[in-house]
Amino acid sequence: QVQLTESGPGLVHPSETLSLTCTVSGFSLTGYSVYWVRQPSGKGLEWMGRMRYNGDTSYNSALKSRLSISRDTSKNQVFLKMNSLQTDDTGTYYCTATMGIRNYWGQGVMVTVSS
Amino acid sequence: DIVMTQSPSSLAVSAGETVTINCKSSQSLLYSGNQKNYLAWYQQKPGQSPKLLIYWASTRQSGVPDRFIGSGSGTDFTLTISSVQAEDLAIYYCQQYYDTPYTFGAGTKLELK
Image 1: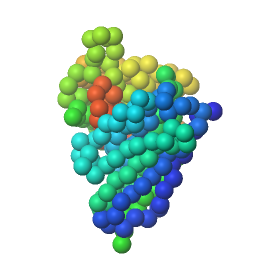
Image 2: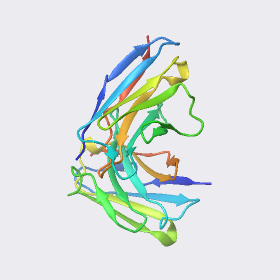
Image 3: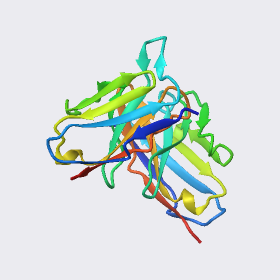
Image 4: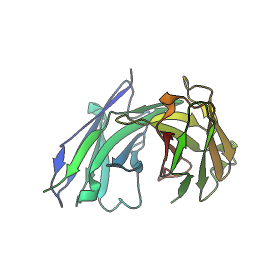
């Protein structure tokens, strides 16, 4: 069955770079797009970016200068890297995918930005 | 970027009531090529990942109770929940997927009166 699992460090220091991995199973990254969505603590959902099935990427305009999304299709993994982290980047980071009429989300990974 | 404006930000309801949540986009989400509105509604309960309820503005995801009704077209959309149940208490988000970035509304928190 389809699964998405986010992983990464729970704590990042201010000004450092966040690196997260979304490991997928049950589908191919060359067939479907994967998205990153985050939720600052106590706030709403923010669409961060997309790794399209063909390898193209799209980013949230507000994050574009700090954000990079890549993938390793052989490992079924999509990566998120965001630099210059600040305290307001604290929150839960999700990866999600849609296959036809089915929509899947990971359980999310909590990231705290603190010194 | 397309801006999604959701209202109200919170709603206090009693079980059995009907509620309406509004979502307005800064540009039309109706694609003329297929006459579909690229608008989805999600439900998020505390401590859980969001769950897709409705896509194409009015198509319920499999397994979603028929008390959840999506409507609207172009720039104005509505999620109606008829006969609210205790299990419906959550935050609801609209999202456009017409053009990247696929922006979300700010959310509507449904609370018990």
